Structure formats: C-alpha cells, structure tokens
Image 1 (cartoon, rainbow, N blue to C red):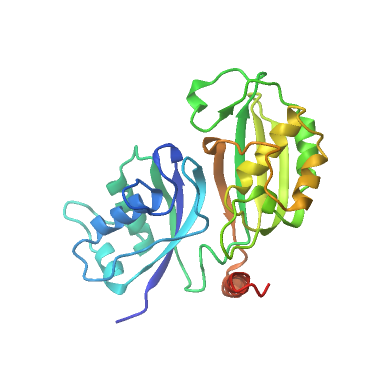
Image 2 (cartoon, one colour; image 1 turned 30 degrees about the vertical axis):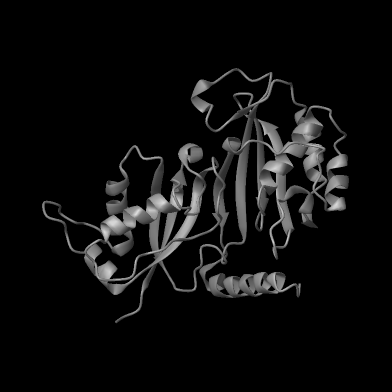
Length: 296
C-alpha cells in the first residue's frame, strides 16, 4: 500500500464567524471548513477521509496568522494531487505544493480561512506534540487610542486609560513554570502547570496597547484571563504585584474579568530542529498521559 506522506500546513483565519477550531455538530468551525475542503478535493479518491492534527485549538472568536497542522496523505491522495487537472498546466513541485494550491482554489481567495504554507515532513513531526512554544498577541484600544473601525474585529476597546507600565510590571510577576489554575477553566484530568516564557506589554505606533505572550502551551482561557488580570492592574483596580499573589493561590478568582476572544491572535508556533521532532513528541505524550492518570 505504501507509506503515507505527512504534510505540515500553515494556516491563517479570521475567527469572527467561527465557533473555534474544533469540529462541533451544527456549528461552523475552522477544522470543519478545512476538512470539508479536503473531502471535496478527494471525493473520488478511494481512501480514508483526512483529519487534521493541530498545534493548538483556538476558542470561538480567536484569530490566527501562524496556526500549524499536519495531515497524512495516503498514496492515493498523493497520486491524485500530482495528476494535472484538465486545462491546467501543473507545475507543482510535490504533493504538498499541489495540496496548498488546490485547497486555496476550493476555499477561495477571499475566504476567512487560508492555507498559507505547506511542506512534506517526516513522520516524526507532530503539529501538536512536537511544538515547544505557542505565541499569542492581544490588542486593546483604550481611551488614548484613536478609533479605527477597520481593526474592530481583532481589537478590544475599553473606555479607560490604561497604565501600560503597570500592566507590564504585573505580567512579570507570573513568568516561569507555575500552576496557572487561577487563569484556567478547569478540565477533568488536565494539568494547569505551564511555563510562561514571555509576557510583555507595550503601545504600538497607533497607540494600541499590545500584549505578547509565549508559553510551552496554554490551558483553556489562560491567555484571556492573564490579559484580564493585567487590565485590572493597568486600570488601578489592584496593584501590579497582586497578579502574582493571585497566581500563587492557584484558585479561580473574581478579582478580574476574562477579556473578550476577538482581541486574541495566535501568531506563531515554535518547533525544535527536525532531529528532535520525534523525541519532543514522545516526551510530551508521556507527560500528558501521566497528568491524565494523576501520576505527575
């Protein structure tokens, strides 16, 4: 039958009209749209339907410019991609290039989800478990920011003036390997221990208050809750060092509000050198299994 061909995909989407990444019955999702495009592309191929493995599932309303996923093409899929379509002079270098071109044609140039890149990778690459970090950006327009209706779908507006220095100071108190239960929605048998590697606040050239966050992984609602805590510090609702104190308690709190989803964008996922893809994935799978069994 032949070995499958693993393809790494770069994906971007405007999350406004999606109920998140993961497929859900009766709802429009990013995964659902992409897998529907794959089904249409390979409707005449006698092979199992293709399923995407993603680096990180985003919630409803969250955007992405640097999402990553992988799929395994059966030999029949790869062969079908390399057959030129009638009236089209195919110049695709490999199955990955052909896949990107044909999916782009199905999705359309004005779609709210696009495949931005594709490449053939070894079977050791795992979009989820090989990743070493995820990077997000959050945008806030405060009372000092000139209104910009063009950015209303990826920027949250607040009616107060934010103290960016206080927000940055608060962010530094939660860096490192910690239990982030304060900032995560509880899920059965799921760990809330994460390594927050970078968390910084600044104003961009348009006066928008921007957060950049990077961690080995983020648990459910963690980014938006961390941003909410910093907004509380930036609007003088509590002192910057209180954020670290709340984190240390490792209990959900009502001291701040979780910020809206539409200000958040997944901008990049980091991976080690190809030689380390397999060992990284194996280590993370083992750790997740231990967490779920309560052994960690």
